[in-house]
Amino acid sequence: MAQTTHDWTHLEPRHVLAGWLHQAITAAFPDHAHQPVTLERPKDPSHGDWATTWALAHAKALKQNPRAIAEAIRRELTPHPWVAEVTIAGPGFLNIRLTPAAKTAVVPKILTARDRFGAGKPRAERVQIEFVSANPTGPLHVGHGRGAAYGATLANVMAFAGWQVAREYYVNDAGRQMDILTLSTWLRYLALFGVEIPFPKNAYQGQYVVAMAETLKQAHGARFCTATAEALLAGVPEEPPAERTDDDAAQQREARLDALIANAKRLLGEDYVWLHQFVLAEQLGDCRDDLAEFGVTFDNWFSEQSLYDTGLVARTIETLEKRGHIYTQDGAKWFRATAFGDEKDRVVQRANGSYTYFASDIAYHLNKFERGFDRVIDIWGADHHGYIPRMRAALEALGLDTSRFEVLLVQFAVLYRNGEKVPMSTRAGEFVTLRELRHEVGNDAARFFYILRKSDQHLDFDLDLAKRQSNDNPVYYVQYAHARIASVLREWREHEAGDAAIDETLATADLAPLEASPAALALAQQLQMFPAIVTIAAEERAPHHIAFYLKAVAADFHAWYNVDRILVEDPAVRHARLALARATQWVLKNGLQLLGVSAPERM
Image (cartoon, rainbow, N blue to C red; front, side, top):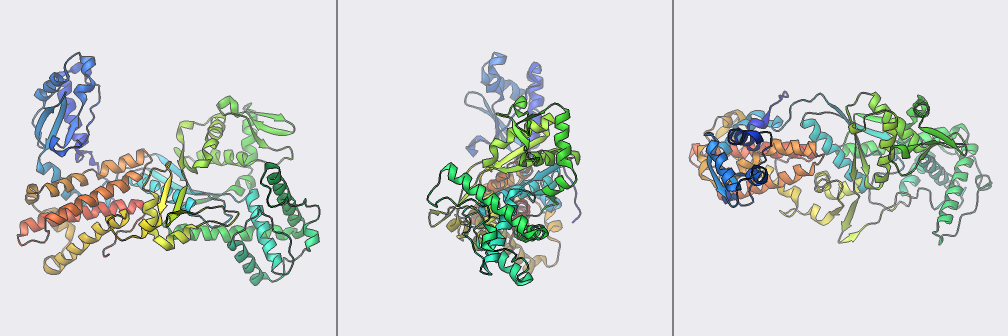
């Protein structure tokens, strides 16, 4: 279907009624016409469909009783085709009750717009969203999965709301972690030929490392078996006792690892570069496949190494130096981050000439802005919270507009099976992979459950609930509503509609029969909210609003379905109810698609 754009504000009661009330306020209190009007849904439906506290909020400024203010506003209200009644309640609430026709007016609009219902007007703003960006040193785990689900869903929602969105994965292919993985794989490979040393505790331990070593042996035989245990350990410090967990022991283990990496580079020569590329390709390929199966794709996979190859890291530090933000101390170059609000200055180039991770990160973010993005959104794990001030400081020092830079944090997801928490450590190999989670609960449950909370809130992922086929499981509950409607429509096609175009046929249905059903009107009014929910989710970077909204739509649909039979004898009633059901199906489908969740026709 060709994409069309709509302005849904003329359908959203909050916008329409706010403008209507503002006209009355301007007439009654012209000196306060600049004050905005806010509308909320009353908790008790008997109070009406919408309410405003404007009179209460401005009573002090107007020096009048709020009920008198509310009465003055009501007197200036002109008749509105959507409004059945305006009442004053309590100390000065203005309550508005809509006509039934106002609530059902959205149905034909949905049936006309279909998969574009709720979409926003196109915006000129180009937004880059960088997410996941996990080191390619092992399989993605369930913590990465939450960042992937959040980033992909946010990108979907912002694109649907009108932004021009680019999705990017930053590949850390130039750092020490890749050297550690390369060493880990080579040590496992050598062990297959009987060349063994005590495997470093702080190297990568997972079975996937052994699998890469076996693949290497099958493809290349003994080509890389070029060292003895004695040569490997030459000049390498001793491993501290396993029971030591103090800082000194940790530093000794890291120094031992660095010495082994240096020996591997010396002993392998040019083959080290090949081996490094092999493990990178293996892990990055697995990451791509895993994410693609999860419904998460990227427009660009950006290589950290390319920042060095193009000289951008050096150019970035030179730029900071020319702007007076770099000083030298003990042979190292430091960025004067404290001048821009960071807690301490940061090393960007070590005394040995090598650049720090921070230096390449600065260069990467400079590159983002040089590519012309109007807004740059980074999605980081919550443990990187302390990194935000230094990155913002670096961008400011480069003369960039930091208001165009956002960092959204994702808290870790804790997996529970049978009430027990699973510990995770990537190097130790003790973690549940995203692939294992997906295979256990399915992509749909994983995507939906990951997005059920705000990204910066802790998430306890209940596997038992995610697999349960009951109304307690929110994804099952929402999908079942969609499948239930699909079943009704199939039966209608079989007995009446045949091959007729469903939406075109139902878009012209007389909806008057719905006006006698409170449940039908409640559902229609819920559907009306979808465009506003999309806008809120996009602007607040909070796609969990979509998930909660879909649960509310499903609840209203199931409640209506249980009191009003759809395929009744009376054709006028039947067609009106089918139109509402089909409109509900479109909203559920559109919302699920934004979440990356399927909308099944049968369950």
